[in-house]
Length: 160
Image (cartoon, rainbow, N blue to C red):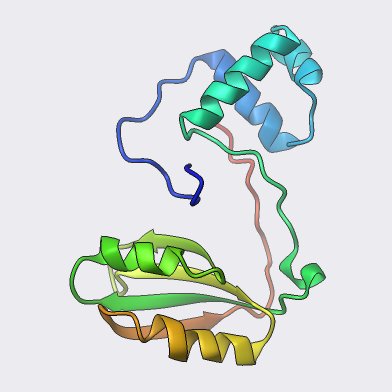
């Protein structure tokens, strides 16, 4: 992923078994030290550091702190389904530039784009929908799915 959280276009990076194990170690605990990872995968701390840097620079992974939005004062999350006209990639870029939008994906099916938003409350969500998202050129219609409860969210699906 790049600095905007987007997956770069191109061929997938070929990962060897050691790189896959490093990724799995970090998925299990992103705070794990390079020394600990090195012991688990059979490399030195410096070698692990180098590999993590290469994996990060290649856009294969990023190491981030995952927060609970409610604990930070963001009490309203929603997924917005967007039906679009024109180039959906242009619209996706515009949506991705909105600070309250944390996830944008181009889709096939009933919606052209799905955008997840994190807001302080319903008033902020309403303002975001009416003044920002629905006003973007290319938005034909939206449907908002308000989150009542986040039941499961994991990032440790491993590698193949």
